[in-house]
Image 1: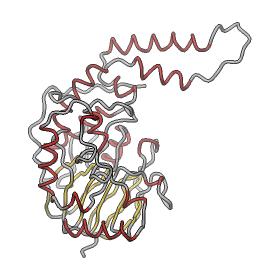
Image 2 (image 1 turned 90 degrees about the horizontal axis):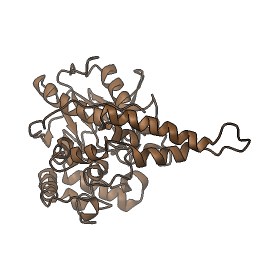
Image 3 (image 1 turned 180 degrees about the vertical axis):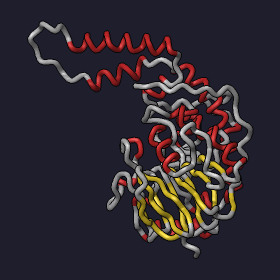
Image 4 (image 1 turned 60 degrees about the horizontal axis):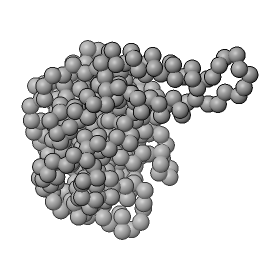
Length: 348
């Protein structure tokens, strides 16, 4: 494990994202990140969005991240810091940075840590805490291995070591404070947009059903502010049918990805019509969990009206891909620079 330590000391100014605008000349879309900071940086550098020192060099390009930055990996804090650092830099250069609210952001700030990795806690630990943690981990490993001179079967240790790491990783208190309503990341995450429309393209983490689409972009934002204004401390306090937990809500919707039923196609067309959009880009549902999909590759569904961006970066190692929207075409760019056309931007 390697703990990356953030250096930020204060909450950035109100992001104030534009919820609707023209389609920029170039948009880079990154699906669910799953704390894959190193891979994220590699893509940004390869696509000439950031320099080796992490500074923005993408000019007027718009960087769009589909949500689910935290959980399942080792670089959540570093990735969040980078997104927050790039936002003002990109705007000063004429570009922009968007970070959508995902279900894992909501869970992470409301005490639902089922998917938090030990490495995520360690990002918030002190150097002294980390040193003590690794010393104790080594002692525990030797206990599991047993006396070296004893002739006996040694059972696998991987699962037990992982459970021990998650139970005893330092940094949990600092993590929960930073993710809380007064914490650096907690405050920023509570301001993230639910859905954004650029030209004919609608961006939302899970998917937008007709019932939620009728609120419109500003209505969804107002509803999110209302949910946060109630100051929930735990995920279970949220309304199961509300904006943040509804199985068909914008953070959890999967039907467009997994079903081709006529009613599902009709719902998608209805939602797109209400939002005056032609295509919906979503994360949340991994491409390799859908028939015909595979890891590391974006997937078209619903006759090109739905574009799935969650390519499983958390399990892709140095692989994976992002989307580049430019000159009326949506392309897939893989790590290393290879690209392929996914679909044209539909105008109607």
